[in-house]
Length: 471
Image (cartoon, rainbow, N blue to C red; front, side, top):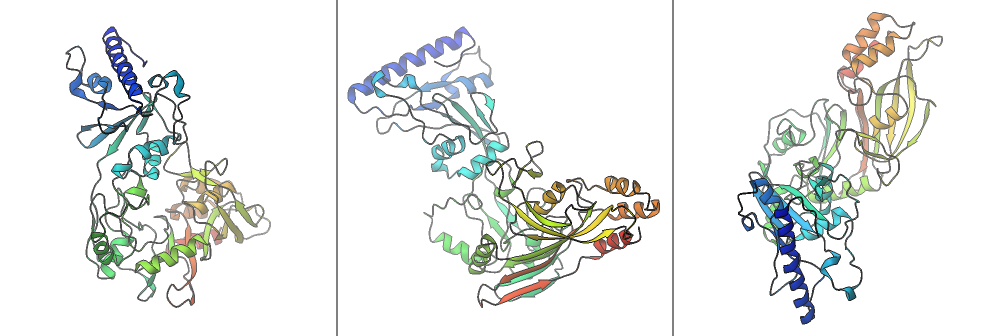
């Protein structure tokens, strides 16, 4: 009936099976038998001293019946800062011979868990991230595949972290404001600034600076509440209080959450799109809900005009073209992205590029670095960095994607036409990814006016560029 390892467990299994058989027969006689078994985890059901505490928690399964419902009851146990849930898929042995084949619906692991935890407002997206974080076990084995097909009798055990309150405090941080009105604000973000608070970056972010700049109070989001997306969050929160029955399943807004994943643990009012911490350049933010929705729609329709410039190793071949390769989470390193094998494992991504200048500039010397312009049709995480690496041209200073300082210096030194002092100067100055969001253009949410803004790269970028020109 289920796997046992000792005589004591065998006796427990036999006792559970007999009870369940009697329960099944009784329910069939009443013709109200449901397709789901009701199972509850109870550490107190086994008090024998022959089991240690861990074994009692894991194996204290027994069957219960409910006079009002035969719906699946999800097991729950608390352990310090986490909750453990155990869900058991219906087993064929629970049905009579005439009941036909048991069909698990939904059959995908993430959908199955979310369906059975619906009352706790655990979303499917949050479950998928929990699976990716290694917090889900099927029949005792860690499962990293959200598309796993749930089988009859599968025992699914998962850990749910306690939901936390999220806070963003206004901070007096100087901003380079390019444009601002009552609806939008365009910022020239410096390299090194994180866009929004997240684990490990609770302060010093663009959101903290925006809250202060716009005269907003501290933003505190209690568990179970929506995370506001615009800077008029005081109004949004008041509207929420008037409608406590809102059952929105937006994965990015609803707490509690499964697993320590960034998407569920960030506070980002006003943020429409993001730039990586090491990337400098232009970013547009929304100051109210209508503007936020309008800008998001423009990004979804790929009508926002964005141009980036990057200093890369080598020379793209061809010198201009289009990279259309799906991007997904790197299976070997969850902290970075990579080219996915198909759209089933990654998301569609397309980048247009053209080479603006090569270094050394001498025609009789091999190219060791290039200045490349990128135009994005999509906006995936690390898109330019991943596509640049795909071309064999890692961005200078990019420690994650083949552009670290030592690699930069080595490649330049391998070129006999470049002096050692110049190669070392370039490597020394490449302390962050040499990537800059130079232009951004969009339609104003209120007036419909076409707005375009441009800013040249910051001083550190220009210093590396000057050092390359001296090579």
